[in-house]
Image: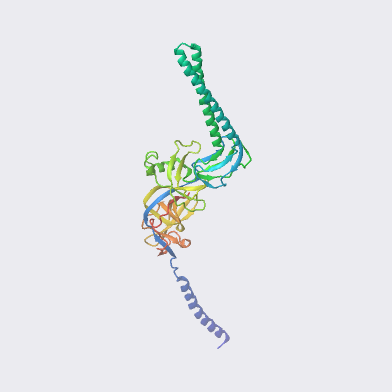
Length: 394
C-alpha cells in the first residue's frame, strides 16, 4: 500500500467517526430540559367582621387645677404637706403666722362689747323718754334724740359684728386647707417668706380621678363620629361609644373613657373641632400633661377582607398583590387598603373572598408565569380571628 493511499484511508475513517458525533451533539442541543414552576406559599382570602377605629393625638388634663394663693398677707409659718403628696379635702396645707390676726380678733371683740354696752344705754334712755313724752315731761326733741341714739347704737353693733366676722375669717384664712381631694405640686415658697394676699402663688393642687383627655378632630372625622353617636352627646350621653387611650410606650390603658364635651364651633384656622373625654384614673397612672392616643370606633365592616402585610408590595403609594388564578398563573393586582390590624391590611377594594394570594416567594413570581401554589393555612387568618382594632395608616 502506497503512502498516498494510506493517508486517504485514514482520512475516510476519521470523517466517518466525526459526522455521527456532530449529529449527536446537535440533537442534544435541541432537547433542553424544562424548568419546573417556582413553589410559592398562598392563602385563600376570607371575609369577616372588622371594627375600624380612628386614632387621635391627645393630651391629658386634670379637671380641677387649683392654684393655692393666700387670702391674707403675712409671714409663712409652716408647710404641712409633703411635695407631691396626696391630700384630702380639708387637709391643712400651710399655716401663716396667726398672731397679728389674733390681736385683731381681741380688739374687734372689745369694740363689739363697747358698742353693745352703748346700745344698752341708748335703749334704756329711749324707754325713759317714751314714758316721759307720754306725760309731756320731756320735749319732742329730746325724745327724737333718744330714738336716733338707739338706732345708731344698733347700727354700730351690727357694724362691729361684721368687723369681728371679717377678723375671724382672716384668722381662719391664715390656715390654708385643700379645697378638694388631689395631689400637690411642689411648694414655691418656704417658711419665713412674706405672703401677699391673692398674689403669691404657693403651689398647685391637681385632681386625678377622673382625668380629662383633650384632642381635636377634622370635619370629616367629626361627621363619622356623629354617625357613631347617633344622638347628640348632651341628649343621650350613654349612647356614645367607649373611648380607649394608648400610652406613649404603646400599651393600652385598661379603663375606657366617656365623651363629655364637644366644642360648639369648628376652629376656622385649623378646620378642627375640640373634643374631650373623661376617663377613670383610680391608680393615678395618668398624670396631667401626658401625650396619649385616643382610639374610638369609626365604623364596622361585616365583610372585611384582611391579608398579611408581607403579601403587599408598596411602590409610590400604590399597593399590589399577586393573585394565583385557576390555571396556577400569577397575576399582579392593585388593591386599596387604608387600615391595618396588627400586621394585617384591611382591603377596601381589589380582592374578593376566595382569591388566592401569594404571601411567600414573591421574588420568584412574574406576571403571567405559572407557579406551584402551596397552601399556607397557618399564616392566613380570617378577619374575625384577631379582635384588635383597625386603625388608619397613611
